Image 1 (tube, rainbow, N blue to C red):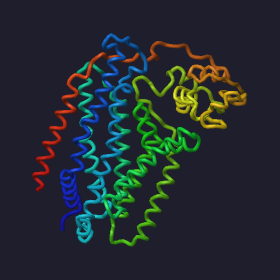
Image 2: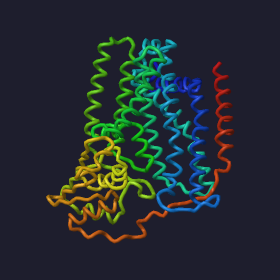
Image 3: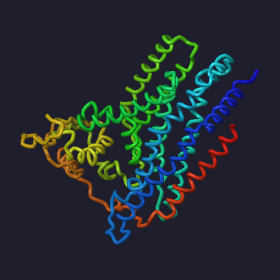
Image 4: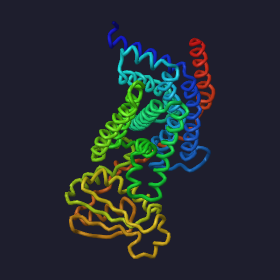
Length: 443
């Protein structure tokens, strides 16, 4: 009798051979390089022009953070890969056993449980995703060769966001492949769910409120958060929980010999347990700003002053969801306040979605502050205006400005030399050659 360890090792080897014999995976590898290349080359060209290449005037500030100017647009290619290419690879690996009849043979042998099988498939798929991440590593090597700088923590934050996004895609596609009888049905269901998250994000931008809170945990918003160097504990826990729940559902439905009713009840139990963990995760407030520019934070002096305020703060903001001032207020002030003041409550008030016809209303555009019973009103939506009002209410002297807290940016006027050759020629040639040799060996 083979030991469970040797059986699992054999299963891993079998799943790896299934992956490298999959045309879907090789197609994903082939297309990933040019997709990353398009994003990287365009980002470097724009960054160089704004830095003074070609006689343009060079600037400073957050726009010249490599995180915002280079890595966020470059890694955005992996959003497309995860949404439109990775699901087909997952469905091929997970659903291929059912189509070939190998799943029934494995179940008859009973050597390994469905949990071991889904674990092996997930490990192989994650390895395949990491191999597909090599073009991003090539982009970093090119950026260093141009004289640019790579800040490890912010790259780690961006990479973590895309790994979590890939994990969600793997779990969703695996669950769909296990439930659906045909791969095409699984692919359509996965794509429909992905489009549904985009619709939810659109509804959040239009309506705000509860939609906005729900959209905060969708893959597009999650990835955007990490791409700006912010690691939020609630999002990490939520993504990990949803991934585990999707894989558990895949393992449940992988047992084709079990009654549908029993599998449905077990799936409901998985959903219930995941819902409890998700609710607990939403209460987590820990976050880490790993960006070199402190893109998501106030200055250290302001944060120290704000943490000394013990009274609860309530803000009533009279701005419509689509008012540009609300975006500026949220981006530059309120999102940072949430990370600094634990006893903060923000309420948005508006009668319409656009706010165009509310301009004549008496309170529209006002921000009402209530700090421990002391009240004030202001129309300032900048970070400086919000902090000034809070300091006045708290009776706190604003900290003195320091040049050390000002991020000056890292301009680099260098064209993307050699990038086209790497992403449009070398990578496709390498991927095509490896695919040819691998597929030829399988035949």
